[in-house]
Length: 246
Image 1 (tube, rainbow, N blue to C red):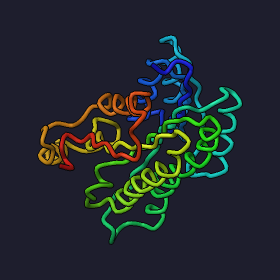
Image 2 (image 1 turned 45 degrees about the horizontal axis):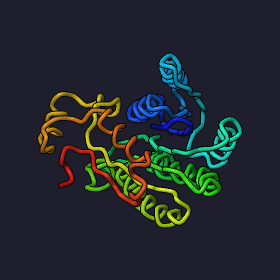
Image 3 (image 1 turned 60 degrees about the vertical axis):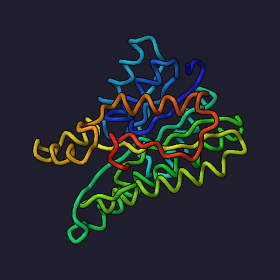
């Protein structure tokens, strides 16, 4: 489905980013596995893709660094000649009630989750404008839609990604570039693995489907939004949360 296409996926060494990278590679895309600190895990993703006959490279870059992202995008274009798909999956949490939240914890989450998404779109969109084509998919969260106690920074960052998605969709549509987002709920990843059984049970109680989601259930929706089947869809937020945000 993505033969000849180049996909840049941020935060692709683990969690949802990893699953998305493997899925797009399996469907024929050449994948750039962006990571910040997890070099070994990023190399594992690349190795898995290449062992299955795909093409992938890893690239270290902190997406909150505007100039570093510019360099990364330029080097990706120098190697592959184009960028067809951008998936903004890099994200962190630093949870706490706002009365206890440190300023640096608020700033860091905003810098990675929201400014990082701006940085990649800013630099990748230039190439997509030249191509007059491209698919941008941002990973937001049910927390950015509903809010969540103890996540003032995370919820604000993910709500910001929703506003950014809608604005970029309006700005880039005339050049054939689609910009959408997916809003996962509680998915079985490293991010939810830190919770104990009682906390998981509390989350499940809020979910109409009464279970956590699976990374593949998110990756398949991202794959659809990156495909030509979604050519008339832009500015949308697709909820993958088992019904939490109904």
